Image (cartoon, rainbow, N blue to C red; front, side):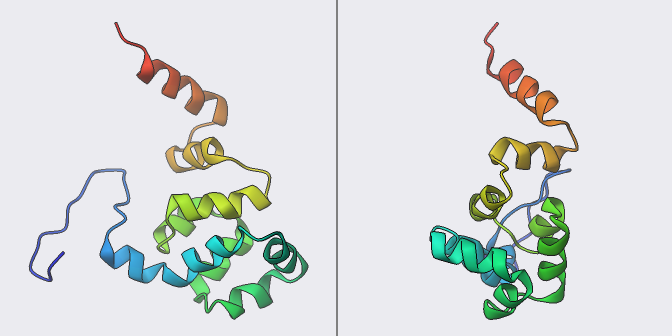
Length: 119
């Protein structure tokens, strides 16, 4: 996207574009590291040190600390990388979707099922 291109907006949706990718680079890199069991263990032992190791900013570190999924998205998190973090917490992508929409997981699942039905 060029500097002169209009930014696309979809009400209620955070667009993960080049600007957000740059903003969330450190956060997403850290979350990607959770593919390794050793890294997941290191994170669990000392979350703050692990966040510092990856250069997370204050907004990102606070969102990690408070398990604020919407805050992580606002801080440049990409849902596919955040799923790695969610796995450490025993959450799955449907849990993330529910958090993004302000729904319970059960209501979010029901919405997905209803959206997939063909009349």
